[in-house]
Image: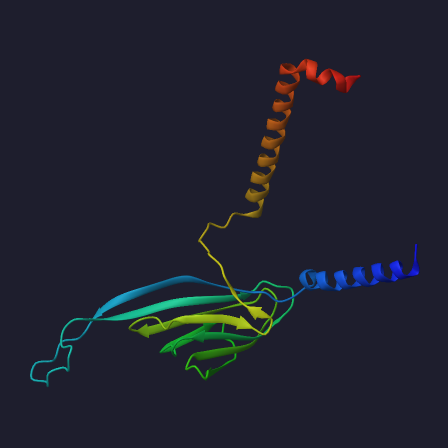
Length: 198
């Protein structure tokens, strides 16, 4: 083989390997979801007898909203500088489990909560309590890239013994179905299978 062709192939393979390694190397990956949110219509208190009248609205309700945002690093490397951006500052919020964070405002007026890092498989839940409407979530991101919104649902936790038993029954059922399909096919189409035995 020509030396020039060998050099070209070496460079192409090296470049392709380096490019593809970006997609297979361990890295941080953030996901987020909303496990629950609810709005309560809380009645406003009436004015006490003999007291000055309440300012408008004097009667009615006010919406008190609560929601939770969960952020998790499902990658293999720590995620750094996780930023949670809201359209406006949440009135009251709390992290569970507790983490160190800082707050700030972007030039566009968005409220930013910054967490320094999340280890692999680590998660944190942001609980928000607001009078009125939810502060709109703009994005969740880190230095490694944006977070992905995932859908979740509640399920019952199955014990390991029960899960292994179900997996064994599924495998036995699949093996039995394959066996009987093979038996039916071999009896229904005997001439077609004769060439296999020859």
